[in-house]
Image (cartoon, rainbow, N blue to C red; front, side, top):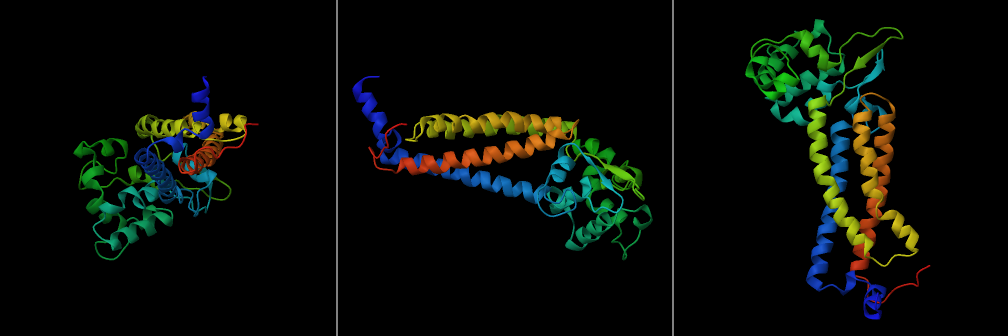
Length: 284
């Protein structure tokens, strides 16, 4: 490396970029950081009640990716309950319909209460009114094949509902299985979307971070590839969780390390973009 190039790097590459380019990079990195925070909030909103208790936990991760077992009387959230509280909330005809079906699901989705309610607001009638237009098998939709609630748009099959409502009986010390919220086809789609998108912005932020003035050099070398490496364990954990409880630990650990390292990269890169050129400590 000749002396002129060495001086440029010693003074910092990023702060020597034109003002417009630095503003562009700063905006991009800040938006990525905000997007990551919102993505985490989305995970909490969608899956934070998967085990029936507020807050994201290992049991939530197990329930989403691999299913898990609940003891009798536990208030674990069924797949159906989680879905109506998130993605499917928009399809209810009214808040009263939602509240009635949510109440039935949170109290165990018992068959004897399937036809109980005020007037047309029984769990069975709510499902016919709000769910079967997509979940009836005769509709031929993808969701009807993945999560069928009945043979057509007019008839509910309680035995099919029970598979998603988590209503398998458990008494005494018995434990009842709660199926994974992500079926294999859904997990394939989920993996496809995330494995093509997340590494792209992770790479771009990592490359920008690799150009900042950061000492000691060995620590910068460690942090630069860390977020990308943790993605391997995160994505792999989704599939491992289907066959082993270790998968949930992989997901939790990889997510934590990714968030910490990625946060350091974002803050340090934005700081260095607007730090005066030449303001550099001697490498150690």
